[in-house]
Each structure stands twice: as structure tokens, then as C-alpha cells.
Image (cartoon, rainbow, N blue to C red; front, side):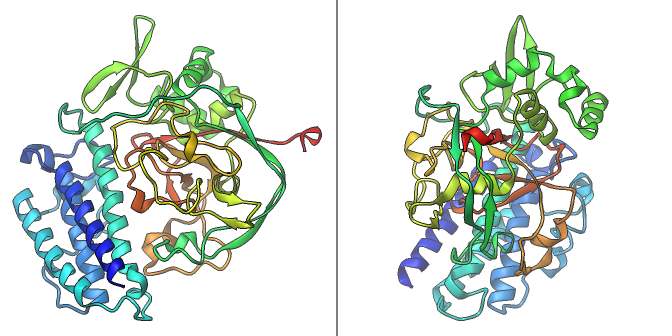
Length: 433
């Protein structure tokens, strides 16, 4: 278990370095609310420490609360994001001191804990995986907030590999059963469990996410002005909000431009489209003569190895994500060009299914057969129903520690500030099976 403890300690350090990097700015940027959709950045910073205290120090180790008077301030279910600026939240210096104090105690607990303990929280370091993934998810939320803030120079960029244009538009997934979800990945969330058999008819799925060039063609063909392509709810949303393209896009002088972390640049036509909501993705798919894949279709195309009769944790296999396989972990502040990761292809030949953009699916978020909430209902179960659509795959802003074939994300179908895109699918015709 020594190696596991060392890996946990390294991941705790890495995620905290990331959180502090995104909040290494003047106090005014951190305490302001840049959109009613998002919390002040400093709220997210102290929230991850409070969550860590609740689960590692109190629930797993039984340590007396450090700051019980702030629990309600950082309870995400007590105050919606739009109202959090009115809370008496910790100011930046105090927030950094608080989360630093929590982290020191957490490392002491890690040093002493028995990771072979049968307790579900302690076994295989589950509680540490819980807080590591939670903090990475808030780091991605911080990046979305910084994009809305529009302050140049705060978010670093980087280099990405070139794209490759060769290859089919779609890949074929034959009919048959596959194993969806997991019973074996130790840090998987409750909504990824239990593993269960799903039988699907044959279908085709796009080899790559839908790109900016293809999406611009939809716009230029009048896609935002033709109700045929939209659900009634989506058409109503488009009309009421005057939407004409992805969030952060503008049209000037015959060129599409985007604003990315405070800087305006021409839209790179070879990248996956991002900042589109479910309604936009669904309308494009209809216009293209296709549809959005179901969640099960997405997962099978991503990770099912039919030859081996088992699911892979990543499209390419067992190996942890690397910069050669996927665009994850904020390697750069944007999606990679289409076709940049042929080595990360799934067994069926689908590429860039992990990283770059979260991908909308046609499925409402709900529990799998036999679902059991753990360690608390508010992580997943309270969101089940017909309000939230499932997103899969992880974006460029998602960390490898919080991404896998079975990982499930969800959001309202109107959300666009998150780093979302999509790919299309279609049911195979009889003569194609």
C-alpha cells in the first residue's frame, strides 16, 4: 500500500497546485461574481477545503471539526450559485490558510490510515480519490468562471499536436451486448455502478467530434433560423435568448471570431466545436441527418473491447492518459485539432472520445439498475430524472484523475459556459448490418 499512498500524496499535491494557480490573482477577481451561473472563485477555493475536511478528517478519520461555523456557507445545496456573493465567505488570504491547514491534517491521516481497511470510505483510498476528483472538478469550474471573466493573461496556454485529416467520417459498432458501468474501478462514483449488460442494435458513430468548420456550415445554412431542426423546447430557448451560434462566437467581416480567456481570435476551423448546449447539438445532428448517441452507445464505442469481452478503462486500453493519447489536464487552454490523437482511438476506431470537449448524449441522467447512493445522495441521486442530460468523455480542462470510460457528467440542456461539444450517431440501416 506504500505505492498507493505515494500516488495519493502526489495527486493531492498536484490538484492543490492547480487550484492555487487558478486563484493566484488580485482579490477583486476572486471575490467578484462574473456570472450568476458561477460562484466567486474564492468560494470554490474554500469549498474544496471544506469538502476535504468533511470527508477525510471528519467522516473517515473522526477528527473534531476545525471550522464548523462555515459548513453552511460552503454547502453547495444550501445556497444556489447566483446567491453566493451575499454569503460571508472567507476572503482569499483566510481561504488559503484554511485549506492549507486542512491539507496538512489530511496528509497526516493518509500517513496513518490502513488502505486495506474494509470500511468503504478507507478501502483502496476511496475517500482520497473522492476529494481529489472533487477538487479537479471545481478546478474545471474555475476555468469556466475565468473564461466568463474575460481577463487576459490569467489562464496559461500551451502547445498541442497537429491534426490528421485522413480517416472515415464514421465508425461502425456491431449489434450485441456489452458491459456498461463498473464494479472494479476503486475510485468510480456511485452513478457509474453497478456494471450491467446492455444489448444495442448496430449503429454508426462519428469518428471525431463535430468540428468548428462543420458547425459553421450549419449556421450558414440557416440552422439557427429553421425550426425543423429544433425540439419545441430548444426552439423556444433559441428565440427567447437570441442565440445565433456557440457562446463566445461573433461574426465580423465574413470571419467567425471567438473570445478565449480574454483574447479574441479567429475560430480555428479544425478544432472540435465547444460551448454549445444540448439543444444546439441536437439541432445540428438533425440537420446533418443523424442524432446524438445515447449514453450506452457512447460508452460502448469508447471502451468496449469485443475481442477480449471486457471494458477498457480508457479507449486505448489500461495505460494511464498521456499527452500522446489525449488532450487532458489543461495541457493547453483549448481543444486539440481534429485527428490529433490517432493513438488514443477506441477498439472501434473512434478518436478523441476522452479529452478536448465534454460530449452531449441523448440520455437523461438517471441511476443504473441496482444503483445505491454512496457516500451521500447529493452527489448523484438528487439529480436523477428528466432535467439533466448526460455528458461524457471529459474536456481539455478535465484532469486524467477524474476521467475514464465510465465517468458520467450531467448538466441542464441549456448550459453553454462549460467546455461542451458533441459527436453524432445513426442507427445502421438493414443493408449495413
